[in-house]
Image 1: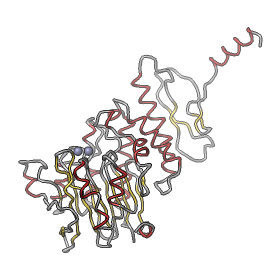
Image 2: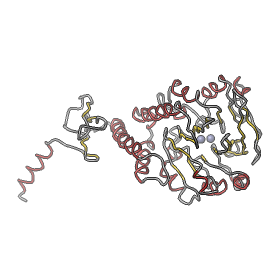
Image 3: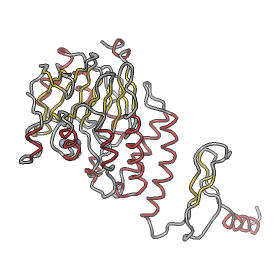
Image 4: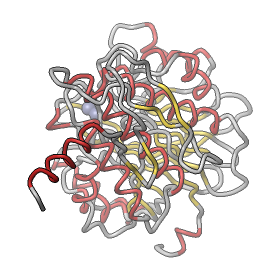
Amino acid sequence: MHRQVLITILLFQAASVVVCRANGQPLMVEPGPSSRPAATVPAAGAQAGPARVIDPRRVYFDDPDALYDRQAEVSFEIVADLLDRFRPQIPEPRQRRTALLLLDGIFHEQGAPQRPAVQAFHHQRISQAAKEITGSPPSQGAVIWKLYDHAFVVRTPTVTLAFDLTRGNSAGAEGFAVSDEVMARIVDQCDVLFISHPHGDHADEWVAGRFIEQGKPVVATPELWPGKDLTAKITIPRRQAHVRQPLPLANGGRSLDVVVYPGHQGNLPNNAVLIFTPEGLSFCHTGDQANAKDSEWIDKVAEHHRVDVLMPNCWTPEIARVVRGVNPAIVITGHENELGHSIDHREAYWLTYDRTTDCSRPVLIMTWGESYRYSPIHRSRVH
Ligand SMILES: [Zn+2]
Ligand SMILES: [Zn+2]
């Protein structure tokens, strides 16, 4: 090509409208000065889908912070679309892994918990879960919601269990936690709260207080909030491997059977609980289980009990061995991407995929606010 023609073409391209495409849809439709406010345009095809935000800047020289903010916004848009179309299921559609890896990229950046888009994602996901939790209980089986960090809500036709439920203050950024109002809607639907150990990413005093106010049991270790009035009202069960003990619930004389395994995070007592619902389903939440000596009972759980769902901390040592010992119908991991932890201990979703490749049972990896409908049919395939 003649040099002058080539230069002319390059100059023309530089001055032209730049259109970036994702799934064939324009993200940016025309250049504009950096002071221009964000505007929205309809998605390509215009008949369906959310409006897309036009990037008001396009140039981020000397402003990496704004670049990260914008990058998070663009990534979340794609994540939301993928998670909406590919819900948690076994076997897992490949597209879910793409969405979760995009989240890892956003969350493994120092300023992530402060970013408005990250906070909005957290609020939106937990609000959506709260809306679902306030709906009708399932007619059979269980619905399991994964919330921030290692929190789960499990609902069966007769009972709703909460594990390590917090508003998200452990992320350490103002504005990240969900509002008291949103969390109250979740708490008000639950019958009991299990707190594995006192660390702030598992225990939230305001949440526990609301359960107690409503006469609902909060089950924890004696190390929780020493010296506080609330502590005297907390249920401290016997920590005894494999032994079922009754746990009375408020209103109506109902009770659950629970096994409180004497787990540890290092030397700190950590309750790993196994709950049996009135329907005969069983759910095991490990908290921050991390102590090699506890293998003594972990290796033998399945010899004593049939477990439907295991909800371990994703970073527990030797997770494949834990899964072998408990032998649940399915595993749903928790504790990925705790934004209050340093980058090296935030625990990416991709690490959970890596760590669980040799697990003997199906593993489901979900993000905040997602839910999974568990049916006892899974059980017949295993036990
Ligand atoms: Zn901990
Ligand atoms: Zn933790």
